[in-house]
Image (tube, rainbow, N blue to C red; front, side):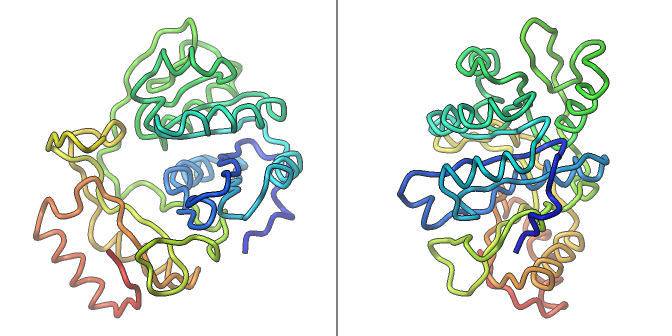
Length: 275
């Protein structure tokens, strides 16, 4: 379980608010994007917490109580466009309890200025893959907003510069899974206890009409097989996870890479069911 006793007066909280009764409440997935951003901010020296109401089984009162205990300077929200109502609901909850709010994810990256207009309580957007951009934003705010926003950060009335996507995915820190519980995460096709998600590559060169790759983009980038296997070994060892789903935009683009990853998992004797 997550140790909340030490999580007080943090610089940055990545938050996912309580869900109404429905599939997400009974079968929440780990907030993997938030956990990646949290890991990058931790590595940069910020005090970080992840407040995942569905994962912790919190209702609105419990969510607000935890947020008051954390006393964050900045709260980060995320969401896809069909989740606009959830974004608005979470924003209304967190806005009175922090100094600044940043929105990232698919909706912010796709709609940009329109998203800022839609959510006037948001102070900035992270446009693109969030690890490096969010850290740059936190540093910019900590320095007193001097100069223009860093690349990938959109604010009102300031110039915007696109940020390049991370190319060496193996250099990114693994998701900060220690900041969330693991006993409540579920997946529809899970057959073994303790579930989580992972990403071994980002991006996809194809243009299927049914798919959205707003954040990952068209440039396919992959982590080394050894790095992925190292992460899976740590997940199994540290969190007793026995079921995992890869959320890559295109997991099977390069056959040799998939074979290398599978062989590495077999060589290590990893006791994880995955899809």
